[in-house]
Length: 157
Image (cartoon, rainbow, N blue to C red; front, side):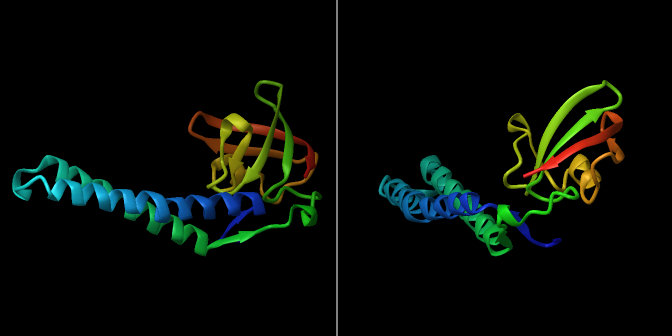
């Protein structure tokens, strides 16, 4: 799976819509802002022009980045996910053996990660540590806060 981002069809559509918005709405607005600033005179001392050019550069960098991400993104069919082991788009119920608290995470691509929603990236320390493991496995993961110990109690879609 390395080298690719795996996302759901919904996430792929959101990413495409965001790119289309940047190209179709934000890019023309940025060009207009530059044109308006140019009309105000001497470009050497025109802070508005400099700011508009900088904003345009940042927008173009975001567009290029998103185009690169989309080029390496593949849609994964959630109905075909194997729940016998931890993989992308599986939900994992764990017991933190250090605190005895139960937690649940869904493993997702970096673009979909949102800890508040319980979605962690497969490239995060916890995500990497869980990949390929099975129910009842004890997993030790080196995290910035120290070694975390989890017992996998369930894997689902």
